[in-house]
Each structure stands twice: as C-alpha cells, then as structure tokens.
Amino acid sequence: MNTSSALESLKALAQEHRLALYRLLVQAGGEGMPVGVLGERLGLPGATLSNHLNVLRAAGLVRDVREGRVIRCRADYARMDALLAFLTENCCAGDTSACAAAPTCVPKPRSRRP
Image (cartoon, rainbow, N blue to C red; front, top):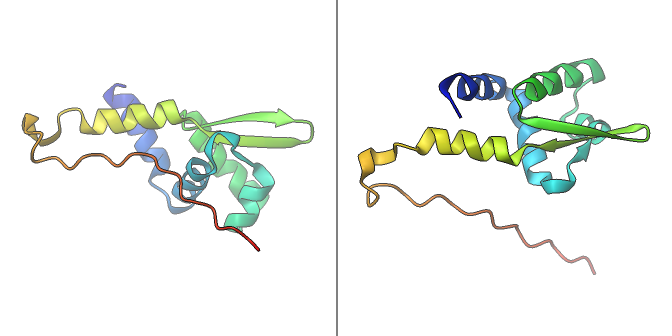
C-alpha cells in the first residue's frame, strides 16, 4: 500500500458512522451483513447509510454483492491488513522488544442459549 491509498482509507474511516459501519462489517466476518441490517443496527436512514457505504466502497474497504433483492456488504480484509501493515511497517525503529505484539484474531465464544 502506498501513502495515497493509506490516506484514502484513513479519511474514509475518519467519521463516526463510517467507522461504526466498518467495525460492524469486520465483526460480521466473511458472511458480511445485508445493507438493511446495517441500517437497523446503526439507526441510519437509507440515504445516509448509502452515502457512508459509497465512501467506504470508494476507499476499497467494503465490497458488496447482490443476492436477489438484498445487497450484502463485506469488509475487505486484505485492504484492512494492507493498511495495518503500512501503518506499522517501521514500528519502534526496528526495536522489536519495544513493540507490543499485534493481537491475533480470536473469535469470541458464542453464548449458548438454553
């Protein structure tokens, strides 16, 4: 990833609702979420939601696919990983003992319902 691409991604996420949308999609995993569910979860009107998703799409952070009448959005994990790698590539001036290890993706256990 180059500086221009990193800035584009960071600018897209530098807004409260877009960051919340992106976090929901990251948490949803590879299955993603339908646009309607995203709007319900965040309480955003359709036009506002569409605008925020378009900004995230343009930045390459979100991909979507039409499934009949439903549009399902997914976080682009490759783009997210590239952004994180760009931000940390020169971390701690090469002193690995000064850097905290990056947390790994560990799914939370789902609560079991009786």
